[in-house]
Length: 266
Image (cartoon, rainbow, N blue to C red; front, side, top):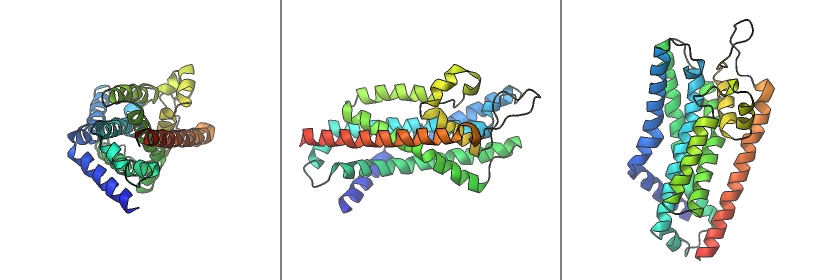
């Protein structure tokens, strides 16, 4: 346990020294929220998906893809410098390495969530629409934890399988998927069969469940022109199962690939 804690502290120090953490994981979501609020203002506030209750869960989900990028960069860098090979001679097991990398990145992911929620309160106050209660904010952070975890696991897997140059390049594919298929700023609920494709991946279900918590409205109103709110009753339970399924899948794959790497390098 002490070895894992020392390893965690080392990784946290490495992360906080890297300016990319502050640029991509913190600065980028702030920039995106600000940009979409400006767009909303210039469209006469007639774009529901850019309203804070709808936008914040999407930006939260997308910001975690930057966490995937930083994870792959740190671990692949450790591989290149032979840091991991030296550690493999220690009594640490594969789960110690996974926990040692995972916890610091989870901490950063929670900070991203808090930053996005604070932005929601700020812009909700500015627009006069409000945001959500404190209790709902805590629930939103909890709901996003599987998505944080999935992104960290994917970053760890890619870094384990690929080198320092290839891992970030492949990560960019997942970042694009988060933005396009996740519905962070695109009205997936108006795209018919495309929404069905998005539903089977973890990105859109995470945003959908988040918008249930924030009491956001769909892009298209009902036949009488009344807003249609995101509801748990129709697809919520299915989306919870999808997220948990991907959490288990990528967690198992991370353990498998780290075990294989450990055996090959020892």
